[in-house]
Image 1 (spheres, rainbow, N blue to C red):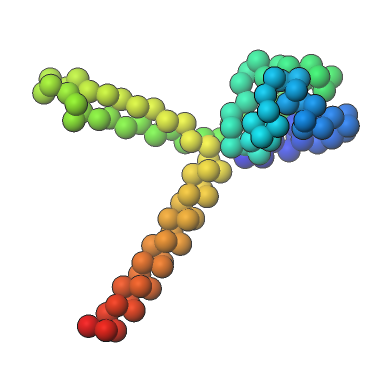
Image 2 (cartoon, helix red, strand yellow):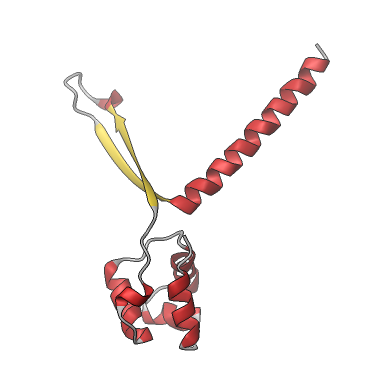
Length: 120
C-alpha cells in the first residue's frame, strides 16, 4: 500500500527521495520501495522520517497491510512432529499483483487447452 501521507509530507518539505534515502543510509530504490509499500518501514525509520519532515509520526504513519503465510514443513522431521515452520510477511499489494498474474495465466492455459482440443 502506497504511503500517501509520507509522500505528500516529503513533497511539502521539498525533500527528494534521493535526499531521504541518504538520510536513512539506503539507496534510492530501497527508499522508493518503502514509499510504494512493497518494503516495510521499520519503527526507527518512521521515527527518523518524522524527525526529518518535522511532523509527528502520527501524521505520516500508515499501517503495513500484509498477509502472513505460515508453512509447516514436517517432511524433514523424524516422525515425532518436529519440523520446520516458516513465517512469511507478504505485502498485500504484492500478493494482489501476483494473484492477478496467476489468474491471467490460468485463463491463458484454459484457452490453450481449448485450442488443443480442436485438433484432437
